[in-house]
Image 1 (tube, rainbow, N blue to C red):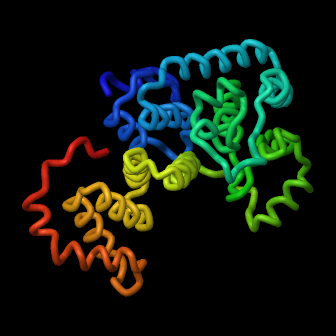
Image 2 (image 1 turned 180 degrees about the horizontal axis):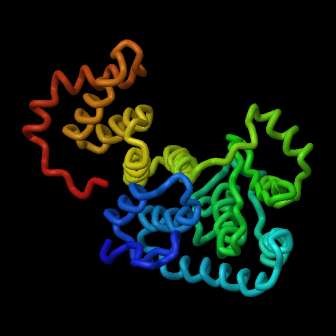
Image 3 (image 1 turned 45 degrees about the horizontal axis):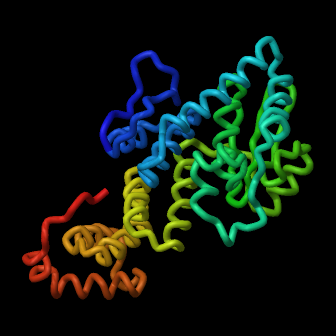
Length: 298
């Protein structure tokens, strides 16, 4: 993909060039800091551009920018609590964003990718959460995502109190007692997720979707992004080795397995990885000798 995707000197965090390349996306992931929540929506758009390269990235950035501009304009002169209330009304009432919670078993790419979400105003709770978080930060509200695996609760805290929005209930404002009960049921706490953990969670949702839809090339790109974010993720490394073998990239599959088994005892690995390692060790030399040079592999 031609072009560049980079921050320019002096630009605010999270505001990046709208032209995307694989290399620039990897650079953004490498530079992502735990506190850098403002970069999550641009990262999501960059990831979407890799999945659906024919879609217009500029259009998505323009729509997000317009939402941000519209909200910041109406929030001028408001106190922080007033901005919190306005953010809630703006997103869920005025713009009518809806969370899809009744058909997760039939999840499709349009529910996770930002472009169709902005068009239909409906989608999976995680990208919706990231969009709402992005808007909150644009009006200087220190909002964070609560660390609860199967919940999507945004928290805003000022000097006087903490306030919560439950994304799964289409933005219902929660009391402290309600949050305590929800988190107790989830065995979670009120700690906030850092930006790298949130992006990892988004990649996990995408990987789960494309594993079900059996789209190997897209899935391979997502495995690579996930491993670039966290190279110690051994389950993803093993899954990528299996996928690379199915795609005919024997050399790369063997490399992944050697790295995997340098950390995992052979007898403790999944049986399919044990079998593949034995097979490749026995046949890889012959297969690699006759292997055609791989095409684009990212």
